[in-house]
Length: 282
Image (cartoon, rainbow, N blue to C red; front, side, top):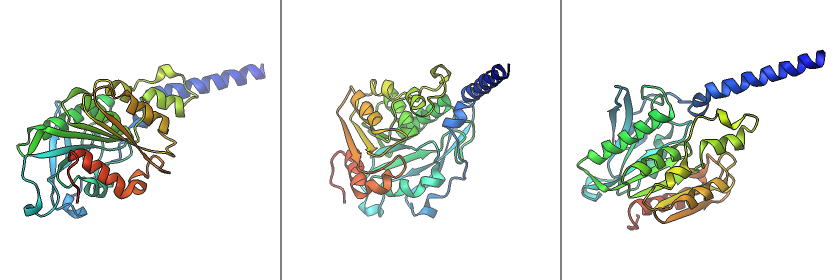
């Protein structure tokens, strides 16, 4: 009888864990760190301004819009190419502002918006609301008279890779950049949460499915020592790009969160040349 009680207790405990994983998986996947959106000039981005977008339900999203860098006399004249920036699940504009500033292609505008529930944005982070916000960001930059609509690029890192590939699958983009991408939510669950049954995974976050619909060049950066989204996933994502040329760039020795540091100048220049269409980068 004691053994039966122990087994029943273990089964009950496991059932409770499975239920919690099913019920709270969006909170696990989207931790939504809060933080007021800083004035871009306070982090050395004198070419930037804070912006606000509004979702269909009235939720307000906070973001940055950066014109091409440098003195006005040295900038290319509009309309400019533009880069949409989608960050990782534990980030927000307040935490990555300096990275956005340093990686902005010198001849392109850049728009980054906090996801719903993240940073200075209202609402709650779900897969549906994040995708809606991403499409809204695309529409906002496409409407700008200073942006060349035929040269809008999408960039996504980690979780943001699924957001960026969603945008590229449903809108006309000139190119897609993915950094440390995973294949989809189910594969991540298999990789890191093997204890739980697969049927409880409600999230899709499906880069593979999105890439099959993308019709533009694709550039993938991936660290060779990435344990969160293993390199094999990056290879599968690059291979899934069926509608345009795809290039996989390996960042030697980089894990999931140090690609910017270890990629360094070579990473920046590769990104810039992709967005600027091979134009010389000073």
